[in-house]
Length: 417
Image 1 (cartoon, rainbow, N blue to C red):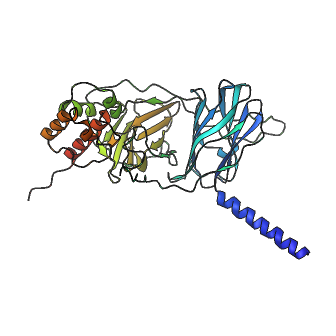
Image 2 (cartoon, rainbow, N blue to C red):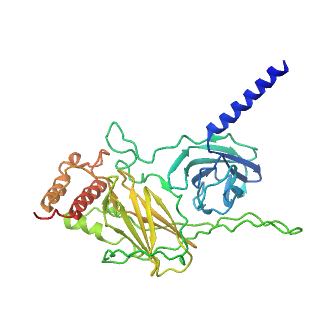
Image 3 (cartoon, helix red, strand yellow):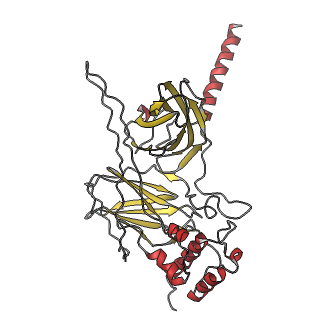
């Protein structure tokens, strides 16, 4: 009888261990009362970065602050709490996290009940690959724990195709769908580490835009073990940041309602997006093979080494010119993507630089006369000019069509025989 009991106990233990391993990485929200909530990470060994959005009840909860948990000690932590009811947190480390533990602690200065929810979360490994994502789960102020919510199985980084439209999901149909966030390779070498790299020829800019508005980001200080008799230091607090964003070329087309000619459409593309960044080539198709290089010039900015994250594109290479403050970020946009951007975290500012990309379309104009005919006929037969298949003709269609026309013009001409 005792032997049978032992076998049963052993079987139960094996089952529980297997079930735990099958769950993979997961998040839990715990509340210890008094407006304090902790996001707990479980089985996070392959995770090197987290893109997390929390939502909370207002006005019951207000004025949140974000503190670093022990699981992510040494990681880069940036938190934005400026939007009531929502907290956006980005976490990245040069190596993977280990095991389980508290990720962040959220403390609300005003608390009278209310709940905190995980609106969305994405996990990224050390190579910048998206591992998994999770939807909404919540906990209520005063409760001791929340249900453990496992992440879904690893997702492919390439978008799937929508059978009904033939378009990649979340790409050409809806602006703002910019694909996964690649945060796993954000920690860069310091400025005093030389890298012998040739500087590509810069793209000339014809007009200047105001410099990006400053925001702030702060890398958390290392955790120190207190000396005997010395009180332990409090948790590292994430400095509140805002994002300085440049206006994307796509947004120019959204806002433009004037006369439409090839010259005007092309001019909207060629106006510089930023004085500190430029893209080579200045427009590219997200065909899954064409890469772009973003040149970031930090010569007018003082401070430490920058950190980079890509959204809607995958990092191919990152190099610094040894003789200057110029960085060269080579990226491959997600196939079919309409939006992508480079996020730069440098000392006390975070800047977003939008890439100028568009999905390829068939039968785009190859001559200016064909381009002019497209623009002239679009108002008369709008349904035939809905190139992104969203059921309407608007500035997004003009943007995609112009991008394809310009991309074709950039292709090298075949050598004469």
